[in-house]
Length: 393
Ligand code: ADP
Ligand code: MG
Image (cartoon, rainbow, N blue to C red; front, side, top):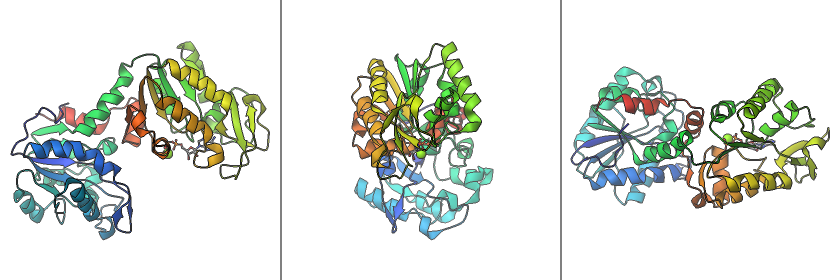
């Protein structure tokens, strides 16, 4: 795979797949994090006097033109960030769009309209891919967040370009997430969140790579129950008890330290106004839920984390959206932020938690991908990466 840095792009027209799928409110961009994430790549190419043609999807128009999902507000916000006017093409393909691309000056930027207004985008349709490929000479993928999708702008288009590169954001994701293959040790995974089922692939793939796993969140309940203890009314996945036992056995066989919570904060339910106190893992009452890890668990996890050289974290330790059940997640976020280690975080809720605590600058890397982050950790080859590797350039 080749990346954009070190490449001579001067005078070239570059088709850049960005992830500008931002939240909108009243026709305005509500959160510009994803736009900001693309700025290093855009500035790099602009400095080289390339012509930039940007393409992205926004929301789920399902192959139909929906004016409320136009990228116009995004083009406007990007323009104010870069301090220039950024025109929006009426479509992402077609003659009129081609003319606008041809009219670009060097260092200029053009935004194409929502890719998903065409059904061919999500279908990875070859004709659509070919049409899209006519909008540039060099293709750059800087959209890690959609790189697990075999869509036309991620995969199909690369078959019709003579040169395909990864952008700077893609490179950063690749470099940090690749540490999984050759980590500084001890290497510790913190896994939490709502369900074992959605994290099963990650747990299984990382079992032979990590030195320790720290399990929190509702998924810990399934493991606690699998060990024969009652979990009261806690969220639990009864169909995964055997699987949970299998994972714990494998961990033992492989000499991976597998830590479950030793105490819990209890409550009536995730939305309860207050907690019902802390109890040890063997003592969850029949009528209550385990909604957060307790203080003894935080101390235990802290000891393991302080020895770590590489930490990957996905999934909050409890029902953190509600203050009474947020302390465990807050504690772990503070502890991980203070480590002298490479700390990598992914997942929408975990990311939100860290931003809420304003700790984002204290981590080595926060992934911009949700699904793509998880699939990478599951050991899958992302279609977007594969397409870049296979592009003949
Ligand atoms: P991420 O988005 O970071 O991958 P998940 O979506 O897997 O994380 O999990 C986050 C969700 O899990 C949150 O909504 C949180 O309230 C919920 N959760 C975590 N622990 C518990 C628990 N003990 N009981 C109920 N819900 C929990
Ligand atoms: Mg989530």
